[in-house]
Image (cartoon, rainbow over all chains, first blue to last red; front, side):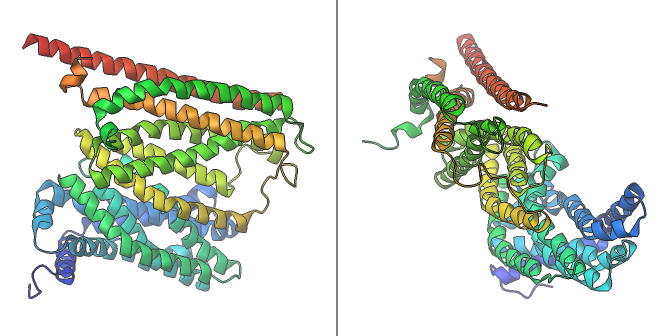
Length: 230
Length: 238
Length: 46
């Protein structure tokens, strides 16, 4: 399957992306779990707060976003840990591919298997919360832009906590505060649309955040992996 | 003069031990003078009465909480760049004090909010960002202590501090944006400009907290140095 | 609740927090000294 150049950044990206994608495709348990969690928790809120559709419509964007955050966070430990445990992470770090390339490939694959399914499913949940069609679309757009940032930030936190005591809770403590701006702008976009305002400031900020994160965070993730491997 | 003389744990240990009592003493004096200004010199506020005097703790604590994070991140950057042990130890020494001032800012903010806004907690931009900052401190401390190898903890926490530093303005900006859409007013003191004695009191208390933080960090780093370097000959011969 | 309550709760909590921190600093020092003692004992045994 490899006809790409050795030691190239796009080559490394493509290699890592296809590898992780195929691994996840063959073992879809993790992905299914993330999606199931998303739907399950989103279904819990109405049970807790009551079925008043006006209330649900108001809290819908925020709740769906929080569920997306939690679901994204759930899948983070697995991003690097199995490769770390069996030594393949070290092998990849020693390879001739620039680290940034294959790290970005792994993060992209992670998003395809978690953030993307959440984004695709969000309209269904939005209907459960009685959101209007235009709000629903803005919500999906915000998720589409924001969940990659969650994958990027989450990858940094996941790499930092490789082999650490405290496991998932430590990861939560690290990642969730960093997720706050994406939550605010992501939910805010849908809420703006719902109240008749323009969501474009929110979406623009999310997009800017995605660009900055995509440029800066892979290097941070590489450093974190190097720290973990030393 | 060799600027790197004090960058070795053994020499810095002695320097820190010599310096820290002075900083604590300064902190005590500044606190006394600051509280004098705060309670005796500064007048009663036109709108808030006496309860505004919480600001002599609240505002300096909030300033310190952010300043200490910044210094912590600076030490983290230095420790990662130059791969020094002492830089990372100083970052570890600063974190608990930073968390303390963040907590104090949040607590006093709540007890200022109740009589003035009517509620202990309002999701305003600064307090919510301060809460996130507290979590950033906890995350740093937890991550630094999550590994068998203390150097791994040093370096992971240092990188986390830098990621947090970049995110802090973004978080504050996002929370401010979120808050101004949902609420509006922030509490102002006397409406126009602050009385000179109030400002003096606040600045004095800020300096007092600053001196205290340095004293506490120097004391804490000494314990960290001893623990980390206990197998070295200089440590055992103390 | 008069204003005194809020002032006492604020200043009091701050004083307590700083007292706790100073206690932790002292405990940290004691712990470090104890570890040094242990290292010295180990060295003496060699």
